[in-house]
Length: 473
Image (cartoon, rainbow, N blue to C red; front, side, top):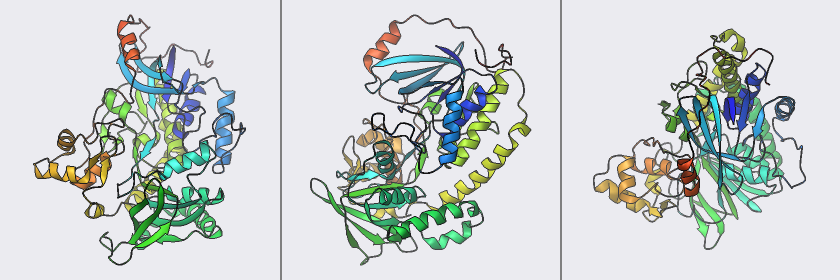
């Protein structure tokens, strides 16, 4: 199929971009891997649970506005489309996606422009026992609660660092889970130095604090998980206090009995598709200009892919990107005054995001307490000891560690273990331009090889767009 703009990701950024572009007469196709739009923030319960039309507990007004606007628009929504590659071709760009839960059939969406709203993913720094059943990521626990209406256990510990821990702990408590503790490694004494940048977040934080108090959830700041216990399943975790340097203070260990541990140490942007296209990265995030354009012609990016910052930032970036795409596809220079309010929100939220990132950095000496027998790469069962042996052999970057140990060569291609390996080695993560963003059946690749090359009309993104102002046809 052919469209003007293909938006990849139906979270806050993708929804805002799709609606902004469609309102200005651009044909938009919105593809997403989930059965329903919303992304992680506005995740909807799975079909068949009898919750059709349910409204999320948070962001009700925003979600209702987006949902209704999408229903009334001409945006072509394509759920359960798992994008595995985006290619530049003579006629524009082609989005390749696998269909449905089984992901055995592929479909192509050809577009004059692509907007990457691919979101982010969690990082977890390994510790002994983190592979036990019952240990899930903080976002995984949230997804279970939102999408499946189930909880990971009856008694849970929520641990790690970052603002995501607050909605996870309060959400589990509201669902009837006894939250034994919220364990946050950040030192609250660091908060005053970021108070000005985070002033706009204080009402939200106060609301979470009130809910934690109402559900009697103990909060342990400047603490970390030392070990998870259990044989066939999690039975408890040992937590300990951290000193000012981020090291575990001997003698402060305590055991918390639980059957679920939701743990997370921040998030990283999803950049697989951007890297495949050759987009420049700024650190871990996709680099964009004031219009949310990447340095690859015809490719925009918005939301967590350009830097972790939350839903408000994603909505603002998506709105700016959608308006920019609409103008560029029509061959006109966008007027920044048209999105001035969104730009102000973007600036404010980026400042707050930078402060949160500085505030919630993981413990500085996390790797000191990781025993050699701790598994770092779950796919290839590579231990911390094996990684340390690679360092002793002269490995001085994560790529060499990967070649010597196979850490990161498994099913997840390093998405889970790369941050831990990088932290243990003291080497910055090496961006890897994978040819595919997800595993692809060989039959799909073989069928593509045998398929004749399509001859679509060329419509470069920077030429005057032929469509009239009357809207989508």
